[in-house]
Each structure stands twice: as C-alpha cells, then as structure tokens.
Amino acid sequence: MKWSIVVFVIATACSRAAESNKPPALVREPAVAGAFYPAEPAQLSQMLDGLLASANTHTIEGELRAIVCPHAGYVFSGPIAAQAYRLLPGRAYDTVVVLAPSHYALFRGASVCAADIYRTPLGDVPISPKGRQWAKAEPFVLEPKCVAQNPQTRQPSEATPERWEHSGEVQVPFLQKTLKNFSLVSIVTGEVDPEKLARALADRLDDKMLLVVSTDLSHYHPYDVAREMDTRCVTGILALDPDPVKPDSACGRTGVLTLLHLAKLKGWKAKLLDYRNSGDTAGNKDAVVGYAAIAFYTPAPQSFNRDERKQLLELARKTISDDKLPALTNVPPKFAETKGCFVTLTERGQLRGCIGHILPQEALYRAVMDNALSAAKHDYRFSPVQPDELDKIEIEISVLTVPEPLQFSSPDDLLAKLRPYRDGVVLQMAGHGATYLPQVWEQIPDKVQFLDTLAQKAGAAAGDWRKPGTQVHIYHVESFKESEM
Image 1 (cartoon, rainbow, N blue to C red):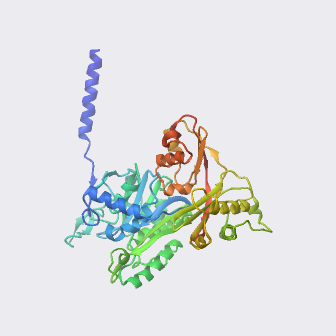
Image 2: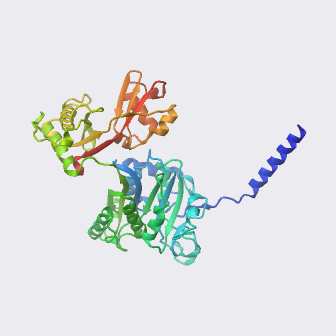
Image 3: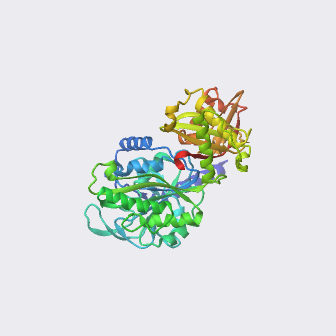
C-alpha cells in the first residue's frame, strides 16, 4: 500500500510539472471590435440576433459547401451577410475555413493563422490544428512576418497578415451565433495563384468543412454605376466565369477566383441570396460599396429538368384556376410513375395551404392535380383560396422518395442521426403521426424544436417523441416552385 501511495503522488507531481511547462495558448485578439461591430458582448449579440431574424429564408437543394459574404461594418453589410449565415443553424461542420483578403499586409502565399484561439467579444473559438498541417505545403505559409500598414496610423511596420485584418474577423461572430462546436482555419491571402490555391484546398476540404469567402464588391462609385459593375461581377460568379471578376469589382478577388476554380473541380453550383450596396443599407448613394451573399452547394440529384418542372407547375395552377381536374392526353411516361407528392401554396411568403401523399399511391400528374386542388380548397387550417387571390399565390411541388425507417437506440441517438435541411420526417407515436417536409428545417433548424412541434402537429405532447415505441421514417424530396422558373 505504501508503494502505491508513493507512485500515485509521484505520477501526480509529474503530471502537474508537465502542465506547468506547457506554453500558454496563443490568442488572436480582436482587431476591429468597437469599430466594425460592437465591442460589448450583449450589444453585439443583440445586433446579430436582429440581423439574422430579419434575413430571408432560402432553400438550398443540395449540400451547402461554401458561402460568399461581405466584410464591411455590420451597419453597412451586416444585413447582406446575414442572408448567408441564416442558412447555417442546424447544419453541422467541424471546421470552418475563412478565406479573406489582406488589406494591410504585403506578402506572398496564403497565410494561415498561427494562433491557438480566435477571440471575439462573444468568446473564444478554437483554431484547428489542420491549419498548421496545411502550412507545411505550398502555397500556404504559417502567418509570416511582413510589412503591414497600421490602419490607425497609416504607417508601415513589421507585423503579421492577421494583426489588423478585419475581413476575416467580421465573419467569426456570425459563425459563433449560427454554428455549434466548430474550429477555425483562418487564411489571409496575399500574392497567390487562385488556381493553385484551389487545387491545394480541394485536396483538404471534406464534407464536414464549410468554406467562407470574404469579399466586398465595387468601391466608392455612384449608386447606378456600382449596380452595373456589381451585376456583371455577380453574374460571372454565378456562372463560375472568372472573366467578369475584375480587380476593381471585388476586393476579395483572389478568394472569389479560388472558389470558382474549386466549384468547377468539385461540381458545385452557386445561388444568389442577396445583393445590395451601402446606398441601400446606409442611405448615402454618392459613393457606395457593393455587397453580395452567395451560396455554393453540391446539387441534389434531379429527376426532372426545367421544362418538366414547369409543366407540372402549370398543371397545378390550371387545376386551381379551373377548380377542377383537367382532362389530359399524351401524359409523359415520367409523369405517369407512381410517386408521393405534396403541393404547397404560399401568399407573400406565408403558408396558404399544403396537402399531399407521403406514400406513392397514384400517378405523379394525378397526385399534382389532386393535391393542388386540395391545398387550395380543403386544407382545414385555411379558408378556400379565392379567384382574386390566384395572382398572389405561389405554387411549390415536392416529389418524395419512399420513406425508410430510421433506426435509433435513444432520443439522443435520434437527434444525432437527423440531417437538417435534407431529411423529411414521419413521426409516429402511440397512435399519433405527422410529417414535416425538409423545407420546414428552414423555419425550425433546431432538432429538438423540430421534433417537439412535429409531435404537437400529430396531436401529442411536445416531448412525446422521446418515449419508448416512437418510430421515425425518413424521406427526401425534389422540390421546385414557380419563382424559380
């Protein structure tokens, strides 16, 4: 027994000695808190909550891989950045890679932050060790010492690219508000070949990583001139065409071009979420700065091309307008396949009716007609759609895969296995049942709240999905609406 005590004491002492010899964590302190965004935590948190609450709800048909966000002061560009960050709650990424342009430092390569912790008024974000691994290969470098201009004094001095850089920093509080349990790789771009950087990132990015590309658009042109320049640039980005992305059209041009090369390598597509300029958000239109929020995603497999989608939407609208099922001849074979289908009606963005079949039970074209008429006339939650409303109604069709059982061992296991924005959920509990389409994740991104409200929709108590005997089936949808045609 005496020997056991001695060994334990010695081991503990050694452990404490090892801890005391551990170097202190390197912290990247905030550089622009109090200037680009509030320095007081409660004020910053309240501002971000307001920006995110005011952002529109966007649907991405596929897996979100990257976002383009502006980096001016939140008063100017925050409403546009929030449109992209509004996509993140409920999604899971273990690493976020922020690709930001250098405004103050001159150097070659892509500088990876060498700190251990990235600090903002909202708290600390761990910096991923992946960055240090990346910095061992070109074109990455580990935060070099270089000549940088102090933005306060406008005098050059020796610093690192991260020292005063705001373009990456302003993204981090948004990330803290919208994601959980992530680490950061902060990269500031100097003189570097975008195509070479894209190839290096392509080998390192995986499905658990989100890429954030930080850029503003044109700077200090009159409002109309800026809109014309920015439209050309944004159109090029959406088409994955680098030619319209000129040096004077995006201050984060290197990051944008890197993203376009990445998108081509990985088969990503782009979707515009918002474009405005400081004349729209701050009032002065004499010399404005442009801002865009753009999502890049891996597209989900599609069964229907644009013309086929348009035909089905027109069939749904004709059914509602005529208030009866139209007679059809020469139905395309694809439309005659038996499919589960929902038809959703919205008016000025608000739900106006939604009816459908979870399981395949009739030909798709027939399901579209039946559910369109039922959504307009027989959804018990709403009064029937009137003829004078038709021009205000938008129609969305969701074609469902066959639901499959989801095996789980506990409520926590169920939460871990659900995939927000992708899974449609059928919940069955002791004689109660209901479903949410995947689109509902846009309004309810929290998994617990999603299941609580789904249980209530089924007529059960909010937490009843946690009880033994609960069954869950998962399906996916191909959805399309009139505003996309």
